[in-house]
Length: 206
Image 1 (cartoon, helix red, strand yellow):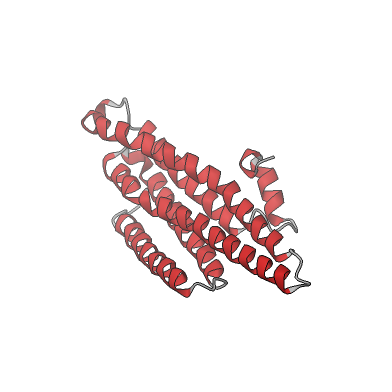
Image 2: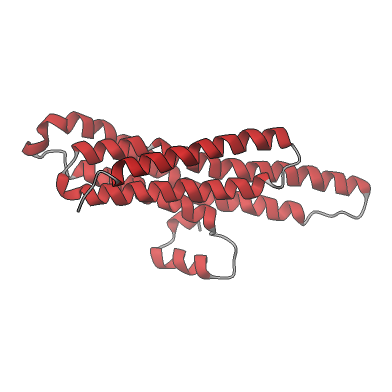
């Protein structure tokens, strides 16, 4: 069964159990799905309200963007776990001969890069919806402003958590040029997420 198909309690049981998946990467993706779901919820609480008729087109545009992101994040939950398994399996390959060692090393490097790229896409997607969440917060139903704030915090957590998972895999890459390029993107995404979260939270007074 896919992780995304588990009940909340089943997912939590898997998380606190002795199995390494779902781990921080899958949980980061879950945070992203919650961010998008909350953003989508606020559009639903805005659409059809006479008070917000002037922003209805904006909400109708933003709702499917949030839904698309939510679906991506849900799939990332399992993609991250699968990527971890490939790395784990690569390390278990035989290494008795020089040929086996070479095959094993190449498999580990390929798997490690793939395991870095999955959370990187989580971070990209999380940062990518933050402008939409900001717009929903500004234009959407004011009674749900705190939901937008939680959505923004979840998006930030998804981005930060995913970036940590990228970095731990980059440490194992022999290709330092690729590792450096991906680290540069991580730094940019981290800074962008931090700025965008603050832009919303610093303007909301409850």
